[in-house]
Length: 219
Image (cartoon, rainbow, N blue to C red; front, side, top):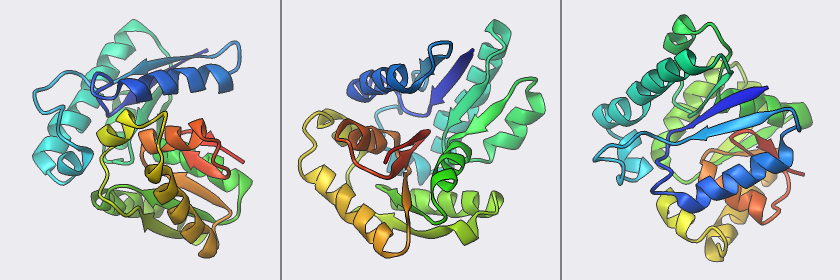
């Protein structure tokens, strides 16, 4: 089985994340499963931090929503593999599924399944205040409000690009993540979803317990 994993990040701008993600999939995927990793397509705005992209309707359409449609269409012609849209921005799902003859799964759907399977109450941790609105909409869409203990914003206004550069030696960044995870646990969470992929890989690389990111569950 093959799964097309479509990130909304440009892997050229996040090389350590791309390498760590590929290595992680090799560890957790079954021998008969191949995960095909794909980053965001080239654009002159790819250097923008996620906070600026998510905060701008024109940027999120140009750099996230439209490329996902284009990449899905290209993938559909090449191979009939399940398509994983690694984004908490779920307005794309009805459109993709309307076109699709294959399975289309979003990051939030995968996270909810992984986290709620192992815990009655789930907390969220994010780097980006602009994504909180999308997380709240996703929680409502999937009717999981009664299973969510809260959404916790990490202090420090750190970008995923900055985290990528420090992925192997996260130091204070990992402490900030751990602090918010502890807040989530104090609020009643038994499992925690990390909204950003780079942050989740930092948790995985450093063996943080009870953290779910993108499609992983630890603990």
